[in-house]
Length: 312
Image (cartoon, rainbow, N blue to C red; front, side, top):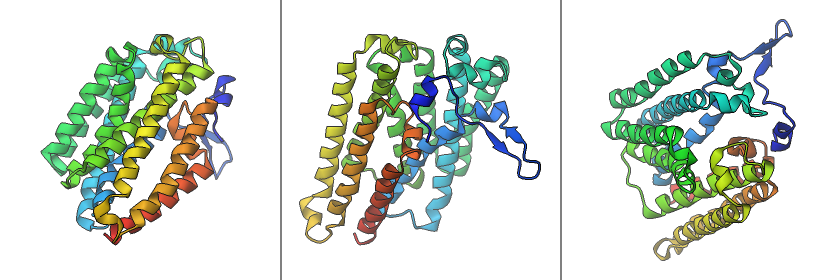
């Protein structure tokens, strides 16, 4: 399991694989690693709205959903390249970030910037050509906000958390826009507060693991008590909003399945909160993929939620 504790000792994620024919270790090209493909897990949020609307099984929506996922992979990777190019000097002084392709010198800054420009342009253009102008607009908004974060807002306390969490919310909205389904107020509330929960938890874990604030400048302005307040408030609001949706009076008597989804949803939230409290949620994608119990709760939620949508 990938843990923050391992990284804290100076190790880096395994970016190589073994050639089955020769048995030799083959390192993934620097240009691919710089795109941070592991982070693409976040882009699966584009499936949330079509799933909630009960249209995900319709073959007509598969192409828009795939395009939404792919274009957000392009856009997010473009943002990561810009971020790493801007932070190259500070990353070189960091115990783990110095191994990133740009910081280590494996990928030139100029090459990274050119790649970023191509990806950032390609994402909305592809969305415009393959789906709807609305998805292209959502991608442009995402890119503007995230680039503003990379250049300036990442150093502004509170705003930095809001901007990062907005990225999750925009991904979820993009899925709805791509397949042209309405977005409920409950969907927006759960996604917004759930995103804030994960981002504030990430900052809390970073602060707990690196109390000297070397990971990012904005952490110097946060106290552990403030970050704990934010993520605890966010998870509470997430569970409240989800509960209000699950127990809507008009639906509960005829369809109790939404209420049952509250069980694995709550367990997953509490399990993730457990990781945050231990300071091991500094990398959300690794926390999720490395926790089998959390993955089990997530799978149970998907099954029950799918049933609730099917019998609606």
